[in-house]
Image (tube, rainbow, N blue to C red; front, top):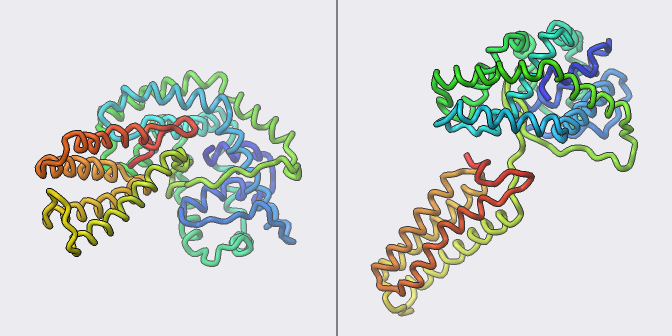
Length: 368
């Protein structure tokens, strides 16, 4: 959930450090996405620091309940389908927009129905002493907190969350988020279309949106984090500045195994062809030039396999290129047509493997 949605569950508290803790995981990751700390199992003798820890734990619980709820699954999927025709031709993934748009709409509804106020949220943040926050960060294992405080002061000063009360700003916020991943994500016409969809969907949620907050609140009241069956949710990436939760890319084990096998075999083939090219071993129909071409293709396969493992779509296109070039080399050198065409079959096979889904999403959907 977004900042104001987290704030909702403790809107009546007078403990500013608890409020800070409920949004600190997002703030910290927004400031520096490389920071990873796990304070949720720590206990500090200072009550204020310990309040931040308790807020941090509550943040994790709320996100866990929200992202596993029927409300989130249903409405993010519907928004995705409604936004799909609005952004036709855009490089942006519809499921990404559906996810983020839903969270922004909820913040907008909380503000416009006076369930929370942005003033109240920022007043809590302003009430926290920097020394106490620094002690929490140090205690949690963060040695250098200069980057965080630079971002944190800018976040408080900008008062950006006030803009969420203006419904058209949801589309603007979505555009800003997408521009951090895709250059020129939307045309002006697409922005207009998106805004119409978001306005309509906001109206459809207006009457019943509090159901998800009531549901989570009831679950929080029944949660005992001393329960041995209680599970902390896993780490997830948060994007800089005003960006929100984006699921950590995941791939099915079979996809990982295939890509690792491709990487290992390609590395072996580099060594094999290099040995053959530099030893008096005669392979029919293979000239020294052809052998060095195969060395280059194998090296490229290693590079492109690593790119695919790093979620780069260019790795897929690169492997497609090496498969096609390898096929042409085999044909030119008079190698068995059957063997050449079997090699070419690697193209649809690779694409098919990338479609294997984990938790409802394929590796292909996550590639950038």
